[in-house]
Length: 160
Image 1 (tube, one colour):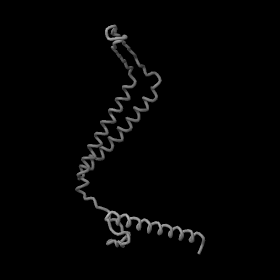
Image 2: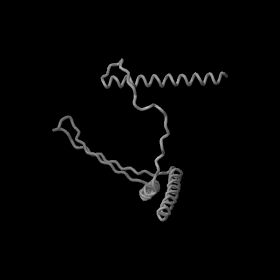
Image 3: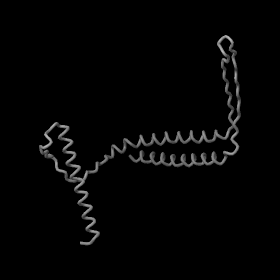
Image 4: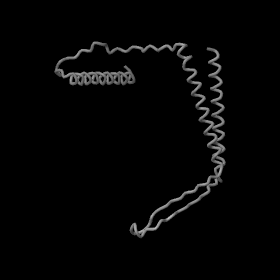
């Protein structure tokens, strides 16, 4: 026996020992849960053999029912991509912000005076043109991809 096969055999024996230990500990836990005597032997009714799981077959009618859902999903994704593009385009515009605050300052309530604070600010996006342009191009590519998916969904619906 070659050393490689000997190592492989030892690995398989180790896996078998681990599986038997797992089975025995599971049976012990089961006997504790069922409040049985731990020395009583539990025999499983089902075998522990391996079997292939059969693949479920999708009926064509089921597939037909999912296609309209897929089309609606694509339409919602298109709307979201259009909003992303609009948001990216709006980032180029300057924004104006105005804040105000009112407070009552003083040592006591009888000696306090009202204090007003006003702030105004203008934000001008100067060095963000490259990032904004990249976001718009990305949104355009996503819109093209989604439009193609929508076209494919429409073709498939006509065939059914």
